[in-house]
Amino acid sequence: MALDRKTPNDLNAFWMPFTANRQFKQNPRMFVGAKDMHYTTADGRQVLDGTAGLWCCNAGHCRPKITEAIQKQAAELDYAPAFQMGHPIAFELANRILDIAPESMAHVFYTNSGSESVETALKLAIAYHRARGDGARTRLIGRERGYHGVNFGGISVGGIVTNRKVFGPLVPGVDHLPHTHLPEENRYSRGLPEHGAHLADELERIVALHGAETIAAVIVEPVAGSTGVLLPPKGYLQKLRAITKKHGILLIFDEVITGFGRTGAAFAAEKYGVMPDMITTAKGLTNGVIPMGAVLTSAEVHDAFMNGPEHMIELFHGYTYSGNPIASAAGIATLETYKEEGLFERAAELAPYWEDALHSLKGVRHVIDIRNEGLIGAVELEPIAGEPTKRAFSAFLKAYEKGILIRTTGDIIAMSPPLIISKEQIDELVGTLKDVLEEIE
Ligand SMILES: Cc1ncc(COP(=O)(O)O)c(C=O)c1O
Image (tube, rainbow, N blue to C red; front, side, top):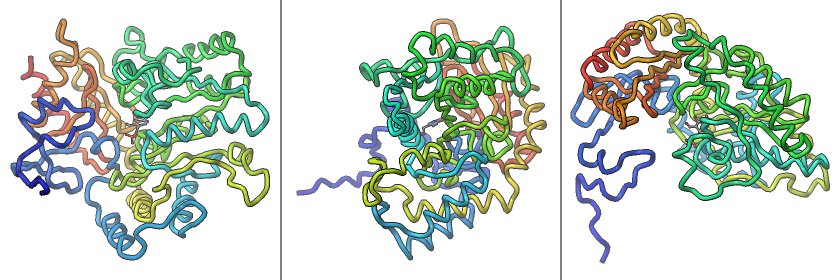
């Protein structure tokens, strides 16, 4: 007989991702609704979303255009295979993405998440060189403290120790650039920090060690988000581009969080004027509503595969849900919402106000650094001696109690509100955070 699994309040079955499961299940925090800038909790409270969900709901929550597009598409064409078959709106969305993408991007490969976008880009990099007869280029270079999702390629090039150390030997042939966080030199920087462009020169050292002819690609987040908002020093990304180009190494920007307006431009590549060979995206592509990711590639990367007999598959890679119709509909409606409401421009306009509001926390109890860029912010706290992460986690819990959603990583509080946030809501978010910091131990 089937078990009756409908026991209310039994939280045991769901093994939650990136969560302190035992703590959560003793004292659950449940959202049951959302609209625009707010979540509604199970006990009926409104919580101001300071994180756009997980850096994904850039247009805010339950936006009618996106909801309607999904409903309509689900009733019209729910699923169609993307292997050897097509459906129009996946093509339409790809064109719309390229309309706002940096000029050098010419093709779109669909995935279902940021992690899958990263795996796709890494595989493409290795296969690209091989397709050109340069098959010894298999090494991948990531960066310390980088976050590129949770699959094996992503954690191999990633640089967050907790995400790597218990999962065995990982993908071979990977090396790492140093991270760009120089607190002594750059503390309380506003926008991109002044010091640290020289850290890109470390790539020359890695090239000298391994030989350029063995290196396929370098992958970095233009702004490292999940590790606690580490910003690229002025000139750093430009240097990385120059060195990769000089040595025939592909440059991949992981724009899973910086894509779709977060820095005040459609993509960070555009904002910083640095053109990579590939861009990985997800999250804001569908406003977080339906899982979808995409890798944008240059024509050069794509065209290297377009040879051999025409009836042959050119790339043996793809996902059952690549370009899923409902996700594509959500993507189109999302991009239209961004455009109609001028949300990328709005993020750029609000950025100075956001910066001033955040930096007003300088001098508040526990605060040892503040960083910002676009509508991204981080407030770093002095860790409790011998108990790293505990103070920030207490801040997170207290903040939730007081009606704001923030994110923490280590002892860093990261914020990335929907781009529809108002100045009053910025004041509320920062003001409440100040109260939180003054109350916690
Ligand atoms: C830069 C970056 N890459 C990849 C990912 C992984 O995305 P997902 O969780 O959709 O797999 C994230 C998620 O936060 C991210 O910030």
